[in-house]
Image (cartoon, rainbow, N blue to C red; front, side, top):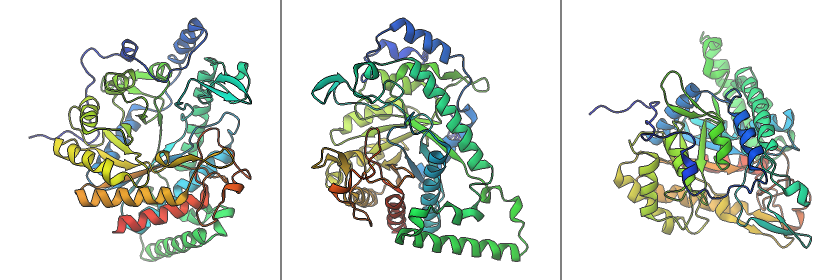
Length: 458
């Protein structure tokens, strides 16, 4: 039997178009006040250049196929929700630094290639549990991310504005331009591993462990040069592949960014290399699954503790009907203490079905709670506990633990409790800057990478 190429996109369902989702029930869509203004904005977006290219998405597809075969590991990380207010080159650089550090720790500690995917250049929208929220005694539309409205507690700010869709596009384009410059222009050169250690991390125990790895890498590079190996010709030492991803939540925006590839005739969502559907929007027969089923990008789906084997198998059939390695990533977000009970039957069912999915652990969203001061937070110990349970259950079921999916920032924030700094609840107010969910800071992120590397070595 002939096996499909790793980068071969599955054909879209017969008759599928980017707007096919409009005939299905669509959850979590904003209540846009002016339908005409929205459609005019979407029409304008559809004429703008793509943010990413079909060939890049196919390259990621091939890399994820390696993960599906147990030959690589997926590190997906970045902001919970990108901000229009905090858009600076320094923020993008510092976020990239942390992800590169984590990837070096994972690669060096395990010998396994790391596929690096950022929650960046498009992660603006957030699903909400209710359409409205009460702020200072006033009921307002919920903040849905800067692509939709503003987080200021006024009715004018919270009213969805389609002009923000265009602002999100332009910020994504600028972010991608900078990421490409950093990852291909010398910043990501492996000889610069010491430079990636940020000041507030370098002084920590995690930073010292990282510096030890950096020194060993530099020693190895010197040895290769002394042996006469021309390192200048080894591109993989001087630049990295870095892909972008986000939750495909605002379907009008995703439709407007979908283009027909002239080389293959396939439809690609050019807003990101990879997009996923969330726990609140993965309904079988819903608009989000209808959209993802037709695009050729690698796609993902979040699975919470309520997910049943029947739902997951239907989801696999909808999104990966041809059983193509690298096409579908299933992202487990069960919560610490529930992984064995809730994930195990899903692993068994998908393995038996023959779908070659990537299994990934999101240890953040199942461990969120509201602290005593009213701030949403997560405890670092719970995050590590869920990852450890994920690895243990995958090992017991004969499934490759393909990756982790975390929310982090390059800033020295105090949003998640615990870690080596032992952040306490009364310290959350010190540097709590997220627009939505709490993120790991640089030290916590690096510590997590060391822990994951230890689990992979097992």
